[in-house]
Every structure is written in C-alpha cells, then in structure tokens.
Image (cartoon, rainbow, N blue to C red):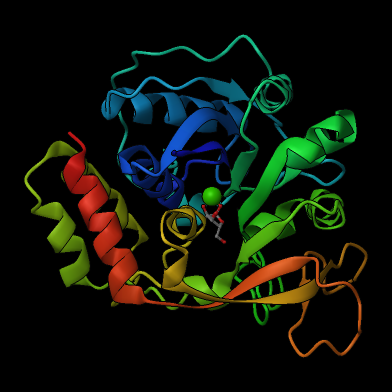
Length: 303
Ligand code: RIB
Ligand code: CA
C-alpha cells in the first residue's frame, strides 16, 4: 500500500525535483501540495507549483499557505533560485487553478479524513506546519511523521550556523520541533554529500524527454563554479521511498530563536550531552550515487 503524503514546499529548483520524485514514485500517494513563502513570494511559489504540475500533467490539489513567517520579516532566496524561482526557466502553461481552501484548512481536512496516518514532507520554511498544529492540535494523532529538509548539525547556508528553511522562520521551527510529532531531519550535513557535477546534469539533460530538459535547465542555474553544492529537497522524499539510502541517528534538537548571532540554528545533540529527549531522527550520511540514480529514473518516467 502506498504512503499518503502532503508536500509543503516553496518551489524552488530543488523543491521541483522533490515533487517530480514523489510524483514518479509508486511508494507515495500525494494527497495535497501546500505552498509557503520562502524561495520566492507566496504568489510566485504557488503559481510555480501549479505550472510545474501542468508541465508534468499531474493534477493534485494545491493550497496556498503563509505569505510570511510567524513573526519575522520574509527573506527570499532569489540568488539561489532566480527571479522565476526555477532559475532562468519560466514555465508558461497553466492547466490547473489554486484550491479555494487555505493550506491550513486543506491540511487539516486531509489529515483528519485520512484512514491512514499522513506523512508530511516539509521542504520550505515551517510556517504552515506550525500554524496547522497550533490551530488544529487534533491533527497530531493522525500524522505519521514529518520528513523535513532543514537545519544542520554544523554550519549553515544563510548564516555560519543557520540553514535557510529554519532561518526564515525559527519560531515556526521551534513549534514544530517541540510538537512531539516524529521528525526525520535532512540537514546540510547530508544534503551537501550530494554534490552534482556537469556529467550528472548532462545525464538528466539527455534523458530524451521534456522533463529532463527542464530539470537540467534549472540545475544549470543552481550550478556554481564547478558543481551544485548539494541536493536538498529530494532527500526527505527519497528517504520515504528507500530509507536504506541514509544513516540516521536519534538526537535531541533544539531551535535557537533568540540568539543575536545564532537565530535559526538547529542545536543537534549528536553525543547526547544534554540527556534531553531525542525528539528527532537526524540523517548523517547518504549514498550519493543511489539517490542520483533514483532522481534520474524518476525524471525518466515523466513526460
Ligand atoms: O537550504 C536549502 C533549502 O532552502 C531548500 O529547501 C531550498 O529549496 C531552499 O528553500
Ligand atoms: Ca525548498
């Protein structure tokens, strides 16, 4: 039986690849896609999601979510994802329209009406997830787990200690990480183990379908100097398809929300020094070749 999932995202180049991977997977059943401001503003993010689904010709409800973090000002990631949010690629065709339900309402209804517990793939800032569990705490019992791209054991890509998705809305991340919902976290430590080189992009470019060409064009924008530094958002999806690709350990993870220099840091207690509850399963290693093969084969299955 396939696993019912909701994808909460901010497409975004790597978000688009994660969505392609999920659509192509026989193991996953995407019940809903919700959008959150992050890489771009919410209108652009939501339009990108609808255009991506139009491009791969897959109709899935898309519900528009938060246009800004809970308390902080919105920060975009235009340098990394370009003005279009898909690098320099602008998709034209629009076959589907946005849901008349808000992201929070659509998630609440989908989760409470599901016979199987729902898994949420969170690959943008966690604002929608925090609003969901604060507004409707009754959903928690019917959530199997959160598979999250965010944070890092060490380092950051927004500041020296903070990763973008957590940095944009650290208050939301704290609510989510303190919620008690089972979380599997894919941070920069593991996503940076998946650099992509020219040959990896060309392999996708020459698959021979339009999705391969679109994906390669987006990846060309992501490419800096001699490589793409890491493949982020496909990780929480790949884990749900084949957990054996990852090495994972339970840790206590706290979110720094008040630090003058450390806002958005995920404080990962790998050595259990605090003795605090190990609330998160943290991915530490990944089999790079296998996850790139998984992504290649998924794109090959699409149009
Ligand atoms: O730090 C990487 C994360 O930030 C990814 O989700 C990417 O899409 C950006 O949102
Ligand atoms: Ca993202």
